[in-house]
Image 1: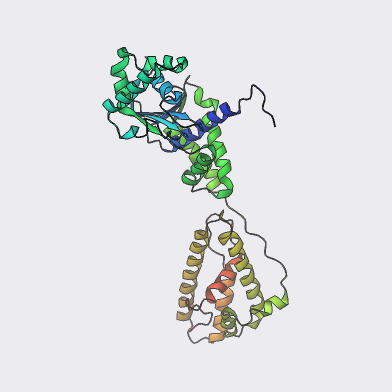
Image 2: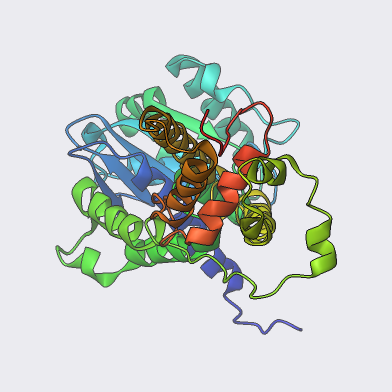
Length: 373
């Protein structure tokens, strides 16, 4: 599609990039901090008692050279008498640009104040002989001898972060690093909600664009309640199974343990549950990252411990009972009792829990048995 003359795509992309960076810094806020947008510059964050951070955000493709307006305009903005330099301990230029091969700024962050000023002076002197009048006007303001003291103060706080993540990578970074507690299927919604919160007019009510730590924390907590704590339903168990498929499981260890208590009538349903549980575990916990496998492992461990505890109690209470009959009663009791809960999921169906018990019994290392002995 051919772009029209007043296409503002790049400008809007720049705003979106600024908001993405602001969202990252909002997550980095400490208690008592506030984040301001377009008040002192692109992004300002901190407590503004002398230790705040000012970030100028630039998304450009061209290399950062000696005569890049992004650097000189940024310095000009901070030189301005309206800029409250005393509030900030750190001044950052964060840009997607990389340093040009001949850029004098390549080791900027390693230099002291005098060295930084010397670099600016050399660039300023060399530019006077060029025809770049627009840039020269900006440089004249920055290098005005009347402003030297303030410029040196700025240089003592000024660092350049180059090759910053672009829009796509920054978006993915925020979702991956700061939204770990949310299922993958919800991270887009959470990201969009927080980005919407950043630009919400409610944050402009004080005639400044301000987001406090407490307000942002409250918003994240609400999204956590809505999305991270959202439970998922288990799929329904099939009502029928292929008899030929069932025959394949007759030699499994968990089936042999049921045969040891002469409970052949329970074998078919045990196999149903075993097959279904394996399918659910594979699809919901192994292949689907929306449901953490740790939730299943925790559930399985609890059910295993309960099995062992109930088995030991049943053995203690035999009191001369017929072992086979008592074992069948133990089996019936276990497969009909209410399952424990599984984090992130709605009520665990009894057949699914029973299938997991059979999976545990099929593991020879577990030494779980239905027979009371």
